[in-house]
Length: 172
Image 1 (cartoon, rainbow, N blue to C red):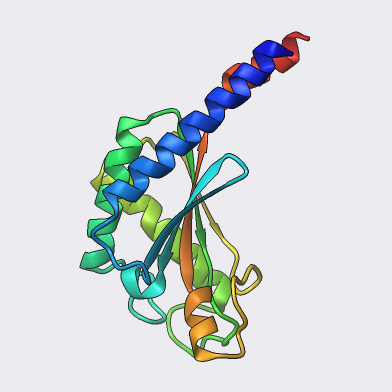
Image 2 (cartoon, rainbow, N blue to C red; image 1 turned 45 degrees about the horizontal axis):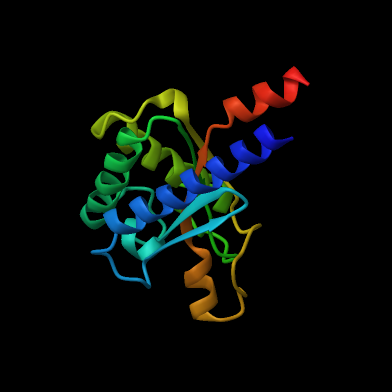
């Protein structure tokens, strides 16, 4: 039990250190466009649509690429972290254009970010997952312009791998 508690504390320290590294790497960006938080042993980097994409597009702009480069530097220096890229939209239906619906847009945005991290910044593709939540995981109400803007985001969820913890649990 002591060994398990020690591993859990080590995991918390590693997660705290990762959050601090990520916050330091991304501190040149506006707080309204980017947040770094920690919960349940994971680090969440939330990037606004405004930072990454033109409205209704899955093409990452130059400012977004600069943020992803900083993020990739931390990821490449910490290779024991799994990376889940989640695209999110507001509840306003897409009208025409390249995407059938908000599902398509949210997944395309996540996939665009994965490609940049992997192809441009050499993040190991075995560590990365792309997913889309469409409008179904809002952080604010879709009834106001401001709320919808907060919901249009991409979250990069960083999870330290727990191999030692799982090995200890399975050995019991």
